[in-house]
Amino acid sequence: MQTGKATIKDVFDGLRIFNVPIYQRAYSWEVEDNLTDFFSDIQNQHEERQYFLGTFLFHLREKEGDFSLVDVVDGQQRLTTFLIFMDTLIEALTLQHSEVVSKRTRRIFIQDDDVFKFQTANEDSAFLHDYIFSKANSKPQVKTRSQGLLLEAKSFFEQKLSVLSIDELEKMYKTSVSSEVLLYVVPKIDQATQIFELLNDRGRALTSLESLKSFLMYNAGLISKNPDQIIRGIQDNFANIYRNVEAYDMPDGDVLRYHTIAFEKCPPDMLEKPKSLLKVRITELVNNPEKKDEALSLIRDVATRLKDTFDLFAEIQKQKVNHRQLGRIFMVGRVAPFYPLMLKALSEGEERFNLLLDRILQFTFLASLVGLRSNGESYLYTSIRNDEDYLEKLNSFYIDNWWNIKQRAADTVESENYYEWIGTNAVRYILVSYENSLTSQKGYPEIDFGRYFTNINREKLSIEHISAQRAKGVEYDDDFRERYLHSIGNLVIDYAASNSSKGNKNTADKLQDFARAPIMSQNEIDAAKDVDWADLGSIKQFILGREIRLKQFIRDNFSIPLTGC
Image 1 (tube, rainbow, N blue to C red):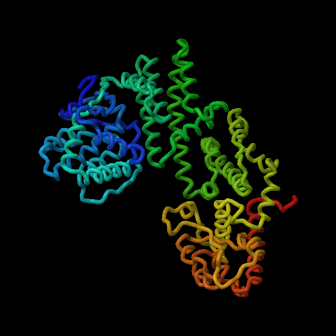
Image 2 (cartoon, rainbow, N blue to C red):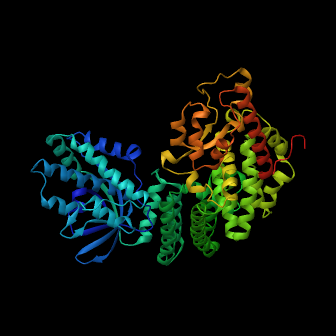
Image 3 (cartoon, one colour):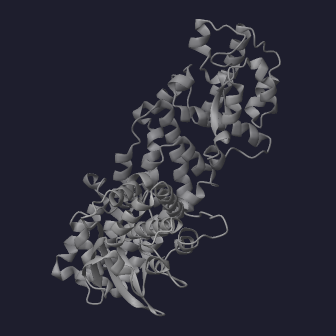
């Protein structure tokens, strides 16, 4: 196998195992964005023209038994997809008793005796072999997002091929095996990184993180006389990064941005250009002959610091499930602007991190309550950049009453139509907080992060009108619709399934549901025995009393002063 043009059959027809290295990103192609076009291109290819499958960069490595090991440095997403497609196509043709395929066909592309021709260095390899390229007896246990996407790709191709005639399948097979590829084959990894960077510079679509990885390895190979160890260090750090990205489905471009704000003294004009910021700093040193050692040190440090940041981000994702204050911040929302602060504080220690969370929760709740558009990011990021106390700056937002937030919050608490005028998430958080105050008094477990963000539809939290918006058996007047219907006193937290079953029942008909509900704030409603739910005046009195109680709860628990203070 040499650099140049070849057919994909020539590439695989030999004693070679193609390996996706650990420092590469896991499989990420999706049906809508990638697989549909991939399938359509092969299906609609003119028979008289050779299909171009793509450009691949291979690093020749050591032998593994009788087989040569070949690292796929570039093109792993397309190559993985092609082999899943080929495996499915061979199976479909075999079922149709086509003569264009045989056992040898599968040996060429998929499995030669007991050796699979394609593998990955991460935990997806066994899944790929057992559930994609083989028919395991057990049901696949999907543990990573990439495994789910591999399974989705297999199912997509099976569905698409199942409706085609044998002639159509054979046409696609001939197109596929004769596909042209452009190969770059190198014996040393530093050569591979140089070619990869050149391909990237010519407009190939990479994520910012992938591009930065190739840039670091390329420049290490460019200025070091013995780059292998440095490049392996970069690869190890990025292998760790990609494990975190996969495990927590991280938005890697966003985390890269948070990193530069938190740890790289990012200037305002580079906030949205984290990759460029790091590249410019490294390039300036690389281009100075007297600063080669400094450049190599920075290259190493950037890779290590990035790995540390992704570890910190992963730690936040782990802690939000059980950490009370952190979970509450995610419940309120508006988390993204504060990630750089959380990363920096966590790197400075647990005590500092917890102090920051208290300040974030206080501010973000008030900001959500009043619909404040600003999160004060420019001031906070400037504090980080200037080595000032960003925690004190955040604290000043409340202490010094920035944006008149205290008065606006006090006015909002006194408003009447919560359901219509305050964001749904803020109202839900208020009602959940009230529910948690009741359960904690009784020693029962609170609604935590997991229950708040459950993926089980029937258990998702919603907002129930105690006296329904169109309640049966009671006639609302204009005063009720304007003043009481959407009052906080007429709202209670509920589970989606339970809320749906109540519908527009009169409250009297819902009391039994409220009494049996595993929600104490609903149990309180049933306990109000003196309410006549068919009498509008009695309903108004109940809502007003509950409204007063809930508004006092909000003021007491969220540091909101009385109106006019």
